[in-house]
Image (cartoon, rainbow, N blue to C red; front, side, top):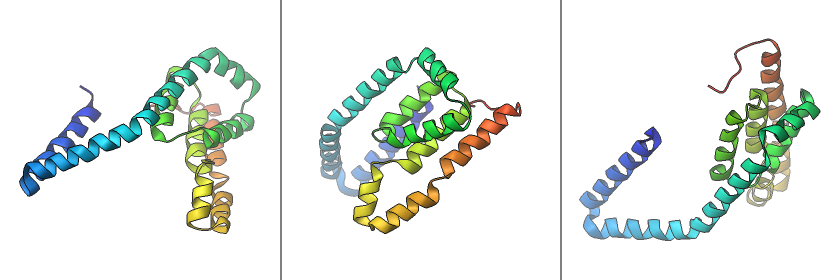
Length: 170
């Protein structure tokens, strides 16, 4: 069993015991009902996410990525990876499994870093929410201030690769 499953099932066990001790079977039942409703509401999105992951993994083959890397290298690859990360749809349940496939496709680490930082910083779907909740001016300022971070990180790790530094995924 994977370590993450052991951790999550341990947390479930602790919470079930706590619910039983605090409120008995009725509190436990209420929590399970909420969990079922949440799972049902999220199920279609999660299913769609896994279909997207599967399709991206078969469309973005090692050969396609190799062609892309021959066309784009250095700063071009960093900029393209950061932009792709920012435009990549969905939340972590979509892009974490997708980026785990980078390791299998032997992508350079600087591409991996640029993509992750691009996703976390440039996430285009977050801009309307930030603008609506805070203000458009502050959202734009945040984007402008953080704009160079994925590029700087990608270039840093790309320069380490050229220096022959240990630059793998582990």
